[in-house]
Length: 456
Ligand SMILES: Cc1cc2nc3c(=O)[nH]c(=O)nc-3n(C[C@H](O)[C@H](O)[C@H](O)COP(=O)(O)OP(=O)(O)OC[C@H]3O[C@@H](n4cnc5c(N)ncnc54)[C@H](O)[C@@H]3O)c2cc1C
Ligand SMILES: NC(=O)c1ccc[n+]([C@@H]2O[C@H](COP(=O)([O-])OP(=O)(O)OC[C@H]3O[C@@H](n4cnc5c(N)ncnc54)[C@H](OP(=O)(O)O)[C@@H]3O)[C@@H](O)[C@H]2O)c1
Image (cartoon, rainbow, N blue to C red; front, top):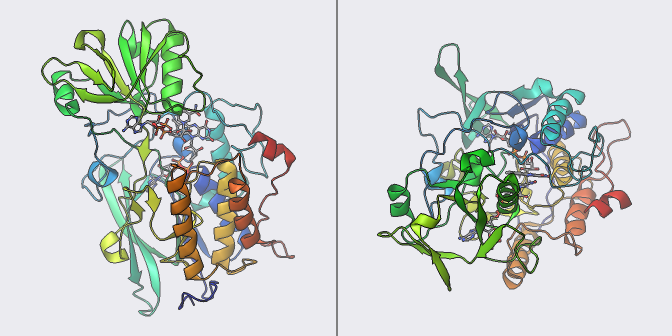
């Protein structure tokens, strides 16, 4: 067992049941990798929606985000166990994917067509993937994991398990049904793009009161029609900011220019704004009295010059189900944007033999989930080719990485693809997993051949 900081770690006790939170792309490949090991009696994938697909399930009629809360983080916006609660929803992906099909598909099942496929393809693909791998039977749909607690099992008081408190909305009776289940291991694949983030700006809250419905987040954006004849300010120039600004300009129905406030230069920005777009710097204040928007070293936009403000300022991961009191601390540090006590963005230093977490690095999306899934499945089956390194070495990895990203002014989980970092990360997972058994149990971690490397 993991009893020292000095020794490499390998799961030695039998893990027979595994719970997965989330049936998006990460949940799909995790279920397939776990089933391939042939080592677990119970695999359950809990999904709060009525179908698998995660991000790729499109809500044409978004539930309004109740209150935009500038500067607030998920623990305040998305608190645990607020009962009774509405079933949450997932944001709409843009109609076109922006990642080549190789990276957005798993190695054993290509997309049916196209390099940059429309958004319904990944959705169908994820559903099909569960079926092809016969893990659709593991899905427990319409079921939200409301609490995750480390606890001793009632049957064997010396053995610790993950106790999940689950809620399913019974639509026929319009009631919530609650129950608990226990698992030897847990994999958190809950996605990180459902709780929107809006920065704190002086005067923004009074501005939202003075101009109701003027300020929104990209999570609720669906189409340009709502902005017909309006003058729009978009904040942010990452994927959402770029997509929405471009769509508004090309729609021909909003008033031009579309203003775009940028904090830094994004990878697709040229030296000049595209036609129809006017760049502005960061907003420093919303004037409470006049309703003007004041920018850093740039002329203000008067209240009469703007009809809509769309914050495209991203999302924060949220773990409202994580019982930090019982489990000995939080999972995520919002001040540094890092998972706490994690190793290689996948393993838990606190619960190395029973907990895995997905989807933080923004590389290769689906394909990188595959490496994580195989590594976790192999670890929990006790068949990984190389053990996890000693705890001390894992801690050093975190310290060194924190230092590196601090120096290079980037985020902890951001792994660039134009240096060797992506390859090193995937190589680690690949080598830890090793080969499947000769008898056919286990899944082979994919090779990263020339074609895939080119797509990166
Ligand atoms: C607007 C937008 C556009 C994007 N476009 C692209 C793109 O073009 N290409 C690309 O590769 N990636 C894109 N991404 C990233 C995309 O999120 C990933 O590709 C991938 O789909 C993430 O998969 P996931 O399984 O990690 O998370 P998700 O797809 O978010 O799935 C997580 C699942 O967990 C469920 N869940 C969460 N909490 C609970 C709970 N407590 N109990 C039960 N179930 C729970 C959710 O309902 C959800 O179904 C985009 C993201 C956004 C937001
Ligand atoms: N077509 C597509 O495939 C598509 C479309 C939309 C989203 N996505 C995916 O969805 C995920 C989220 O993307 P996203 O664009 O919504 O969020 P994001 O990538 O996290 O970008 C957030 C943006 O907000 C800016 N920002 C954050 N805090 C700010 C502040 N305090 N003041 C001013 N600006 C601030 C950031 O600027 P800095 O850069 O300076 O930090 C950045 O431009 C990504 O994985 C993305 O690839 C994909």
